[in-house]
Image (cartoon, rainbow over all chains, first blue to last red; front, side, top):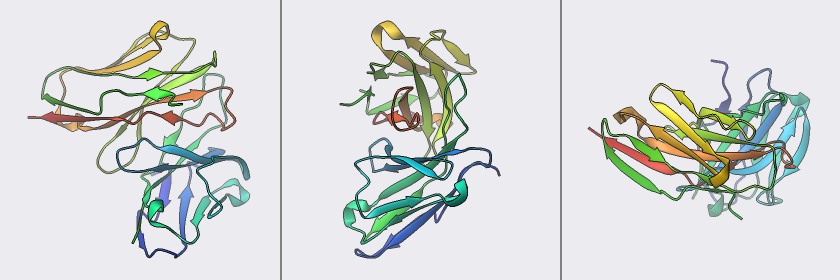
Length: 116
Length: 117
Protein backbone atom coordinates (compact mmCIF):
# COMPACT_ATOMS: atom_id res chain seq x y z
CA UNK A 1 0.00 0.00 0.00
CA UNK A 2 1.52 3.32 -1.04
CA UNK A 3 -1.03 5.66 0.54
CA UNK A 4 -0.57 8.02 3.48
CA UNK A 5 -0.07 6.04 6.67
CA UNK A 6 -0.47 7.23 10.25
CA UNK A 7 0.57 5.73 13.55
CA UNK A 8 -0.86 5.06 16.06
CA UNK A 9 -4.42 4.83 14.86
CA UNK A 10 -5.80 5.22 18.36
CA UNK A 11 -4.29 6.72 21.50
CA UNK A 12 -5.80 7.13 24.94
CA UNK A 13 -3.79 9.26 27.32
CA UNK A 14 -4.17 10.92 30.66
CA UNK A 15 -4.45 14.67 30.84
CA UNK A 16 -1.05 16.26 31.17
CA UNK A 17 0.83 13.55 29.29
CA UNK A 18 2.65 14.10 26.00
CA UNK A 19 1.68 12.26 22.83
CA UNK A 20 3.32 11.96 19.44
CA UNK A 21 1.78 10.97 16.12
CA UNK A 22 3.69 9.90 13.05
CA UNK A 23 2.77 10.33 9.41
CA UNK A 24 4.39 8.74 6.37
CA UNK A 25 3.25 10.53 3.22
CA UNK A 26 3.03 9.15 -0.29
CA UNK A 27 6.65 8.80 -1.27
CA UNK A 28 6.85 11.25 -4.17
CA UNK A 29 4.80 13.96 -2.44
CA UNK A 30 6.74 16.94 -1.17
CA UNK A 31 3.87 18.69 0.61
CA UNK A 32 2.54 17.40 3.91
CA UNK A 33 -0.41 18.71 5.91
CA UNK A 34 -1.82 18.15 9.39
CA UNK A 35 -5.51 18.63 10.12
CA UNK A 36 -7.65 18.17 13.21
CA UNK A 37 -11.22 16.93 13.14
CA UNK A 38 -13.68 16.90 16.03
CA UNK A 39 -17.01 15.09 16.07
CA UNK A 40 -19.56 16.60 13.73
CA UNK A 41 -17.11 19.01 12.16
CA UNK A 42 -15.05 19.13 9.03
CA UNK A 43 -11.28 18.85 9.23
CA UNK A 44 -9.46 22.04 10.23
CA UNK A 45 -6.04 22.98 8.91
CA UNK A 46 -3.20 22.97 11.45
CA UNK A 47 0.05 23.24 9.53
CA UNK A 48 1.86 22.31 6.35
CA UNK A 49 5.36 21.48 5.17
CA UNK A 50 7.01 21.79 1.83
CA UNK A 51 9.83 19.29 2.01
CA UNK A 52 11.39 19.85 5.46
CA UNK A 53 10.27 23.47 5.81
CA UNK A 54 7.22 24.27 7.90
CA UNK A 55 5.69 27.12 5.92
CA UNK A 56 2.42 27.87 7.63
CA UNK A 57 0.81 27.29 11.01
CA UNK A 58 -2.82 27.85 11.90
CA UNK A 59 -3.72 29.80 15.02
CA UNK A 60 -5.29 26.53 16.16
CA UNK A 61 -1.77 25.24 16.71
CA UNK A 62 -1.06 26.36 20.26
CA UNK A 63 2.39 26.43 21.84
CA UNK A 64 1.79 22.91 23.15
CA UNK A 65 1.76 21.58 19.61
CA UNK A 66 4.87 21.05 17.56
CA UNK A 67 5.34 19.43 14.19
CA UNK A 68 8.49 18.38 12.43
CA UNK A 69 9.45 16.85 9.14
CA UNK A 70 13.12 15.97 9.25
CA UNK A 71 14.69 15.37 5.86
CA UNK A 72 11.39 16.06 4.16
CA UNK A 73 10.12 12.53 4.58
CA UNK A 74 7.91 11.41 7.49
CA UNK A 75 6.42 13.92 9.91
CA UNK A 76 5.62 13.93 13.61
CA UNK A 77 3.03 15.92 15.50
CA UNK A 78 3.64 16.20 19.23
CA UNK A 79 1.17 17.50 21.77
CA UNK A 80 2.61 18.39 25.15
CA UNK A 81 0.65 18.55 28.40
CA UNK A 82 -2.49 17.23 26.75
CA UNK A 83 -5.87 18.67 27.68
CA UNK A 84 -9.31 17.16 27.26
CA UNK A 85 -10.01 19.66 24.50
CA UNK A 86 -7.26 18.05 22.45
CA UNK A 87 -9.41 14.95 21.99
CA UNK A 88 -9.95 14.69 18.25
CA UNK A 89 -8.84 12.87 15.16
CA UNK A 90 -5.56 14.11 13.73
CA UNK A 91 -5.36 13.69 10.00
CA UNK A 92 -2.23 13.76 7.90
CA UNK A 93 -2.33 14.43 4.18
CA UNK A 94 0.13 14.83 1.36
CA UNK A 95 0.23 16.20 -2.15
CA UNK A 96 2.69 16.48 -5.00
CA UNK A 97 4.29 19.70 -6.12
CA UNK A 98 1.64 22.01 -7.47
CA UNK A 99 0.83 21.25 -11.07
CA UNK A 100 -0.74 23.92 -13.22
CA UNK A 101 -4.11 22.24 -12.88
CA UNK A 102 -4.24 22.40 -9.10
CA UNK A 103 -3.51 20.36 -6.07
CA UNK A 104 -5.16 17.14 -4.95
CA UNK A 105 -4.53 16.27 -1.34
CA UNK A 106 -4.61 12.64 -0.22
CA UNK A 107 -5.43 11.79 3.38
CA UNK A 108 -4.40 9.06 5.77
CA UNK A 109 -6.81 7.19 7.99
CA UNK A 110 -6.22 9.50 10.92
CA UNK A 111 -5.05 9.10 14.50
CA UNK A 112 -7.77 9.23 17.13
CA UNK A 113 -6.75 10.87 20.40
CA UNK A 114 -8.76 10.57 23.58
CA UNK A 115 -7.57 12.52 26.61
CA UNK A 116 -9.07 11.31 29.89
CA UNK B 1 -15.87 33.49 7.96
CA UNK B 2 -16.99 30.09 6.79
CA UNK B 3 -15.81 29.65 3.25
CA UNK B 4 -17.71 26.47 2.52
CA UNK B 5 -21.30 25.92 3.58
CA UNK B 6 -23.04 22.59 3.53
CA UNK B 7 -26.50 23.44 4.76
CA UNK B 8 -27.71 19.86 4.92
CA UNK B 9 -26.48 18.25 8.13
CA UNK B 10 -28.12 14.86 7.62
CA UNK B 11 -29.97 13.24 4.75
CA UNK B 12 -31.74 9.90 4.82
CA UNK B 13 -32.91 8.16 1.64
CA UNK B 14 -34.10 4.74 0.64
CA UNK B 15 -31.89 2.68 -1.62
CA UNK B 16 -32.22 3.48 -5.34
CA UNK B 17 -33.37 7.03 -4.71
CA UNK B 18 -31.38 9.91 -6.17
CA UNK B 19 -29.89 12.37 -3.71
CA UNK B 20 -28.21 15.76 -4.11
CA UNK B 21 -25.75 17.19 -1.60
CA UNK B 22 -25.48 20.96 -1.67
CA UNK B 23 -22.30 23.01 -1.35
CA UNK B 24 -21.97 26.79 -1.47
CA UNK B 25 -18.56 28.43 -1.29
CA UNK B 26 -17.13 31.89 -0.81
CA UNK B 27 -13.84 33.21 -2.15
CA UNK B 28 -12.27 36.36 -3.55
CA UNK B 29 -9.66 34.46 -5.53
CA UNK B 30 -10.18 34.11 -9.25
CA UNK B 31 -8.24 30.85 -9.23
CA UNK B 32 -9.50 28.22 -6.84
CA UNK B 33 -10.28 24.53 -6.64
CA UNK B 34 -13.31 22.70 -5.33
CA UNK B 35 -13.32 19.19 -3.96
CA UNK B 36 -15.61 16.51 -2.64
CA UNK B 37 -14.42 13.89 -0.18
CA UNK B 38 -16.21 10.89 1.28
CA UNK B 39 -15.59 9.85 4.88
CA UNK B 40 -16.90 6.37 5.77
CA UNK B 41 -17.12 5.27 9.41
CA UNK B 42 -13.51 4.07 9.27
CA UNK B 43 -12.46 7.72 9.19
CA UNK B 44 -10.31 7.96 6.09
CA UNK B 45 -11.13 10.83 3.76
CA UNK B 46 -11.54 9.48 0.25
CA UNK B 47 -10.98 11.89 -2.63
CA UNK B 48 -13.87 11.95 -5.11
CA UNK B 49 -13.34 14.92 -7.41
CA UNK B 50 -11.50 18.20 -7.97
CA UNK B 51 -12.77 21.02 -10.17
CA UNK B 52 -10.84 24.12 -11.21
CA UNK B 53 -12.46 27.55 -11.13
CA UNK B 54 -11.86 28.07 -14.82
CA UNK B 55 -13.61 24.85 -15.83
CA UNK B 56 -17.36 24.89 -15.30
CA UNK B 57 -18.07 21.73 -17.19
CA UNK B 58 -20.19 19.34 -15.21
CA UNK B 59 -18.79 15.89 -14.64
CA UNK B 60 -20.26 12.43 -14.42
CA UNK B 61 -18.51 9.38 -13.02
CA UNK B 62 -20.73 6.32 -12.87
CA UNK B 63 -23.55 7.06 -10.45
CA UNK B 64 -21.88 10.29 -9.31
CA UNK B 65 -22.30 13.67 -10.95
CA UNK B 66 -21.24 17.18 -10.04
CA UNK B 67 -22.81 20.51 -10.99
CA UNK B 68 -20.47 23.49 -10.76
CA UNK B 69 -22.09 26.92 -11.16
CA UNK B 70 -19.90 29.98 -10.60
CA UNK B 71 -22.89 32.30 -10.91
CA UNK B 72 -24.34 30.90 -7.69
CA UNK B 73 -21.02 29.81 -6.13
CA UNK B 74 -22.28 26.29 -5.85
CA UNK B 75 -20.76 22.87 -6.41
CA UNK B 76 -23.46 20.29 -5.85
CA UNK B 77 -23.02 16.53 -5.82
CA UNK B 78 -25.68 14.08 -6.98
CA UNK B 79 -25.72 10.35 -6.39
CA UNK B 80 -28.04 8.51 -8.73
CA UNK B 81 -29.68 5.25 -7.65
CA UNK B 82 -28.14 5.40 -4.18
CA UNK B 83 -26.82 2.27 -2.51
CA UNK B 84 -26.27 1.32 1.12
CA UNK B 85 -22.50 1.55 0.57
CA UNK B 86 -22.93 5.25 -0.19
CA UNK B 87 -23.71 5.86 3.49
CA UNK B 88 -20.98 8.17 4.78
CA UNK B 89 -20.23 11.77 5.60
CA UNK B 90 -19.49 13.84 2.51
CA UNK B 91 -17.36 16.94 2.67
CA UNK B 92 -17.09 19.78 0.19
CA UNK B 93 -13.83 21.73 0.31
CA UNK B 94 -12.22 24.80 -1.23
CA UNK B 95 -8.58 25.46 -2.00
CA UNK B 96 -7.41 28.95 -2.97
CA UNK B 97 -4.42 29.66 -5.16
CA UNK B 98 -3.47 32.78 -3.19
CA UNK B 99 -3.66 31.29 0.28
CA UNK B 100 -0.60 31.22 2.54
CA UNK B 101 -1.24 27.64 3.51
CA UNK B 102 0.00 25.85 0.43
CA UNK B 103 -3.36 25.19 -1.18
CA UNK B 104 -4.67 23.72 2.07
CA UNK B 105 -8.31 22.76 2.04
CA UNK B 106 -11.11 24.66 3.76
CA UNK B 107 -13.80 22.14 4.55
CA UNK B 108 -17.51 22.48 5.09
CA UNK B 109 -19.08 20.81 8.11
CA UNK B 110 -20.15 17.82 6.07
CA UNK B 111 -23.41 16.13 5.18
CA UNK B 112 -24.13 12.76 6.73
CA UNK B 113 -25.88 10.53 4.21
CA UNK B 114 -27.74 7.44 5.34
CA UNK B 115 -29.03 5.06 2.69
CA UNK B 116 -31.40 2.43 4.01
CA UNK B 117 -32.39 -0.80 2.21
